[in-house]
Length: 339
Image (cartoon, rainbow, N blue to C red; front, side):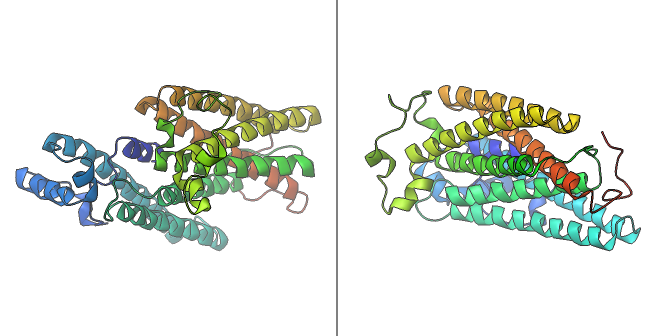
């Protein structure tokens, strides 16, 4: 779902459907008259008038199908989640506590859909040719929070096993810091995508001949705080700096966990996190140097989701292992044997 959303953004398809119809919108245009009606609605949008004037019906259909597919996948996820929760509740497959947790996750999923429309609406305002970067990042953030909640719940059920030994407080803090850093870095990447900052400064490790552009370039927008979301130079620099810090943290964490010799599972996850982040950094550099071709852009986004997913599982298992002395038999009857 996140990758399809990224493709929708990179192909400029997100504003092709100018209405939010949660139920009837599931039916695509059928026949020439229906397509003509949808195309007429799009031709009234600022994006068409300012950027895509003269677009053919065939080109419109291309971007329409990307956006329609993205919305349709969202509907499917919502139906699967709601249907599964209803069945689980009616057959008492979950406890009351678990049911409330799942219901909260459902509310989070519904909020994600609403934020998606708020994002689209921001791009339909006069003078806009794309959605607001902050709202795109917020939309991405809610998607990542929902994905993270799914992984935390699976960890709670024991689907990823259990560590034999708890990490030290310092190593647990490192696991939590890597999770927070991974989420923050993806949100910085959302700002890069929203402001199209990846299409500028396509060199590495320098930016236009130096480590960073001059301050007057980085803070050329008034008021100064808008530079952090609208200035392509500062937005890209922040994403680069975040990557450097996160990668250094992953290497240090892997070394520290290996030296502690506490749990094979924890050590394996630390090494996997480091390897994934190295691969992700390589994808990011390649995408930047090649001015973000669609395939590399999507691979970079998919890699970010993998990094976040592993960071969530790693932090969840570290937290569970630390609580086990107070929760003697694990969290759930479904818990798996220790690694």
